[in-house]
Length: 217
Image (cartoon, rainbow, N blue to C red):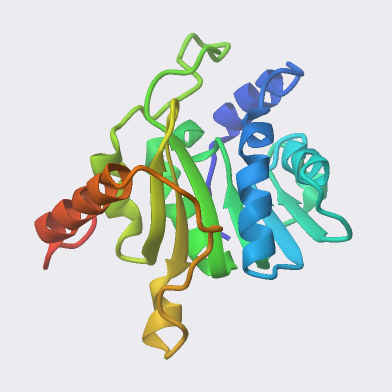
């Protein structure tokens, strides 16, 4: 497995995880993830960057029972290596990655996502800082910077802005290229304002047109 974190940064992250209020963002996303889980008929969840496994707690509070849960986090080596599952989640992780290792982290996600992925990205600063004085969000970039990192590997089936940044539901392009099912609904139908999905579709269309014929940087 490729390197996804430096030794120095691993030590800083270990110190941050001593704070019980660090790594709780997954609790807020858990109800939506539970909806996706039920909609696709999943039986298992892979939690990439699981921290203290708050996602499992949140999913159980959202009513999920008897599901397989596979956490991964370099701060907690007892969790073991990243594992595939029906639904792969990466919550409040990507913005914390050292930029030089981001391609390796995305490669990990590509490798373990065999069906559906639920990924979040915060685009602004965090409230917490590292012991060396840096903001806990090492990467603070807009969606236009992030999406080209994923578009060569994933079909973005849903993208939504939130107060922190954005979250997206993805399916590997390789699955589609190999004759797998194309788009299918992965969120329950809901009465969203018509201008919201139209605006998001426009953002994705503009980015795809910009990237046409260009490799991801």
